[in-house]
Image (cartoon, rainbow, N blue to C red; front, side, top):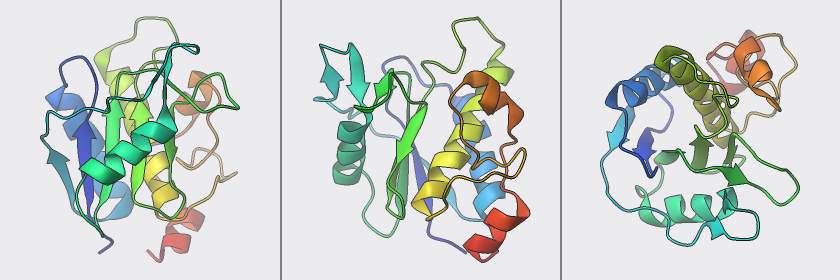
Length: 174
């Protein structure tokens, strides 16, 4: 069994228990590890960039490492805040490659068009598997429908499954 993952809602809106449970079940299935849901009211305080009108995913990763569970557990923050990295307009998420922290945002996963909760949850779960995969050292994958595929758009997220392909599973040793 791989090291555990703690799933933590760090958004501004009220958390969706059903969405977090949906994400948790995808992570358990994809990584065959224990996944808990962390209940903590703390939120990243210094991630807002007024010039970009977005939150820095790098600063959120730092917060997760500092405030989250101790090693060796991984921590996955899920938020409704719009995220960026300096070289991109936005990101759905970011992770430390081979590290312990990852973050995924729901902010752009509706593509500006209202979608059913189930569609949104599936997108969030797929991106969560993707980002946690990076924490386990997985790189982007070119296998069709693998969760580790690149996702520059919601359409690309929808083209993936919330699971890892055989090659990625083999890289994990499972």
